[in-house]
Length: 149
Ligand code: RB5
Image (cartoon, rainbow, N blue to C red; front, side):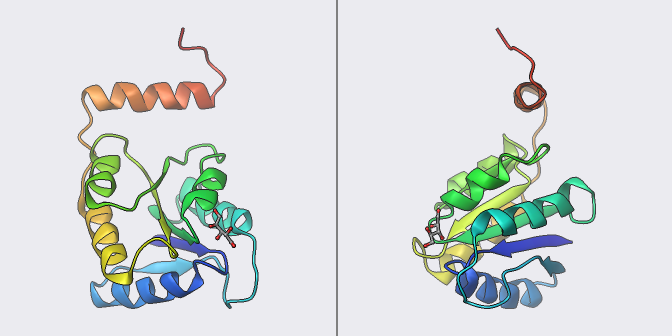
């Protein structure tokens, strides 16, 4: 189950991505916003990411104008590793190397076709573990207030 969230700027892209997820048989739950009326991205980020942290959803896909504001908000949530991506390589390797559990996309940055490709590679790429697990654990340690140095 994928948690979706957006602000008003990301709403049109999120709507397109729902059609795409339907077409590839991926289930999702939309945590808002539900109309193109102005809506602050931090609220959507927190609602969708809380569902990932609780285990209700496996990953989140968030959309705002740039993908950046909503990723900043998402990354404040303990247990969330959010990546704002606008290229295929980054969307693939943030899964393979960072075990990202939240993809953030900019509706004013990219077209629907690229966004679909990024969603597809993000959802189908496995975390490689190994040396990358050590680094992800270090991110978690920072999150828990530990010093790495
Ligand atoms: C909304 O106008 C816009 O600022 C927001 O969607 C996003 O781009 C912020 O990072």
